[in-house]
Picture 1 (tube, rainbow, N blue to C red):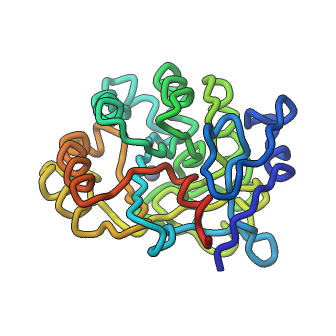
Picture 2: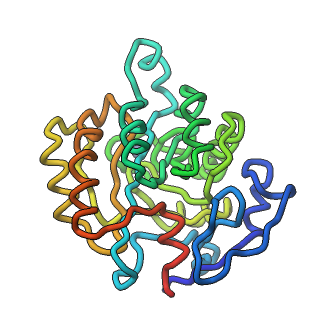
Length: 277
Ligand SMILES: [Zn+2]
């Protein structure tokens, strides 16, 4: 069951790493209006699951109108520093420029390591009202033992890995960080949900896989998205040029086509905020 709640207390547990706590507390937005600015009001979250498990959000209400959230994982793994130093680009400035030019509200699931590597871009995304930043772990290590060959976070270090990413966001100057977390590789189990639940986050998955990872055919990526989107969909894509080189071109096809079909692009916080209404 999806129950949106606003949990200032839980957010302020993260006060050292999230902005907005202990500074200015605005009143909750009126129930029939989305938040004017994520940084100026409390982000909507889902109620925790049983036994403190982090709630999992996959898509918005199907009957809630033609809204769709494009999400971009800014992947960089903790041990990829030498590759970045060697010239590999884990960022994608052209993609961000296109999202801005086309005015597409979007959610960027950023790793803490990415924010450290690209602090100026992290700050630009993290202070732009078009975007919101969400947490994709610090290390991009897996939170389960088998997950696409990723190295694994030790079970006792999961919460710390999430909080280290928020700390990296704060250090980079990000002011629109949301208490949402995407598991690296999308892999999770009960133990992982319990661990990240203690960090006060809502886990965010997706219902549409763009297939942009390592794709070179942007039309194939765009067609996959266009085939999969339904009202309330969450689409997973990447903001990592070396691993997803076709994404920017795919976006140039996806955005006008979905608008033609009557879709409105929203950030994940809007889908979560309207879930269950
Ligand atoms: Zn990822």
